[in-house]
Image 1 (cartoon, helix red, strand yellow):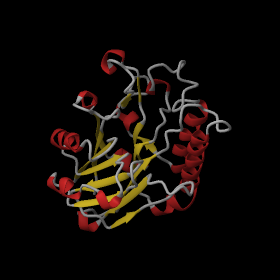
Image 2: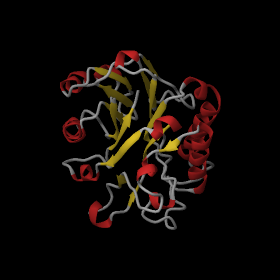
Image 3: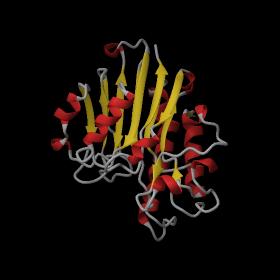
Length: 273
């Protein structure tokens, strides 16, 4: 069977539920992973989500900040949340799909919202940047340890707030000192991919020599004309699952929708057993 998985930093799910509807109409995902939902668990718009056809909903939220959620048309066998850096932030949630979803092999889907890191790429003067680097180090340690044994067939998606490759930003040279593309961040991400044995599925379909963006700043007067984007949103897969990927799609036009997020959805289609 084919499973369609979309990931999107929605920048407030309650404020932009109409945009979620537009995405569902455009791409019809079986599983939708959202970041920066910005709503505490007790106020999550469950009825609105169910009206979109998602009967299975997992969320990890907090008031006004961060937050991640997974909506699915397929039932979950397990929902897990993991805390990083002992800050109490809602930045990770995962689900497992198995026999109840009609799968012979269990599939884990991990949804992450990595800290943005502030504006100054120096942990000594910017604690937010230090938090980001510590978060990445904890992810890497997890991938090196218990994770590999627990998730042989897995997807990792989300707003990882790093554009790791030269063609993931509008100007590699000008952004080397800008948070999200500094060498310390990009090398940390590449190390994480290697540690976890991950495959960058988006770059399986778009060569590394080509520009690829998922985020355009609100600060641009005309985001489309200036096109100063970055690829901050990612879909990674374990090797066998990556080999089953059928397509990757970046819904660029979503950046021009009414009251948009500054991120756009990324959708992958996978043939799974």
